[in-house]
Image (cartoon, rainbow over all chains, first blue to last red; front, side):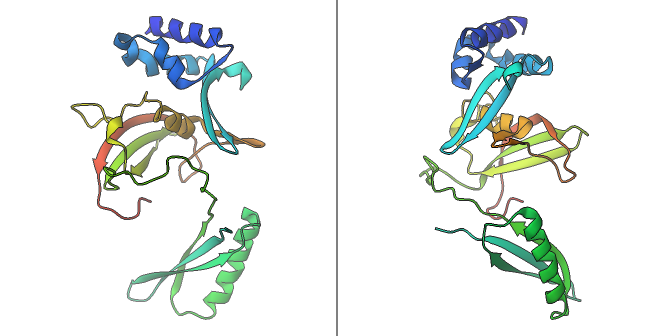
Length: 70
Length: 165
């Protein structure tokens, strides 16, 4: 799971602190995806990143963002 | 098109039978104002009816005409539900059933819904963390207003059609 955590952190950092779900998922190799959600939730529990859904006039947007930016 | 809010009263008679009626009101009033109105109206109704007024539900409608892809697909079936079980900060279960779950989101050879799917993950995140709206974040809760913190399972289930409350 630590490998997936590292991939997630790197992808979010490279994207400037906020990344769409599909783009983030695409960064994780198929054989490691079973660790994807546990890794993400661990990062969220650590306060590093947060899943965020934002309402807009035309619909909701979804991203994984740095906690500091929330 | 204007969409009025509904105040739904549920009545019970001496033999235990229940019935409901609704009174619609304009949608430009606050929750506090609507509650005040509903309570006052219940007073007036109570003077008229011989049954027990059991409850008052405020049904607040919203304009959803801007949804994209909101259509009944040929293979869709509201009896096939996506059952999401969440847990609150106090370890209470909260179940949400979504009628007509897409079969494409169910993992092959199981009843499990693929939680990491691009269409599913935002829903789970919104249930757990809320949705950022103008001036704050609205996060779903249980009947005691305890915050939902985690998803326990997401599974396809089958239920007869009807209400999902």
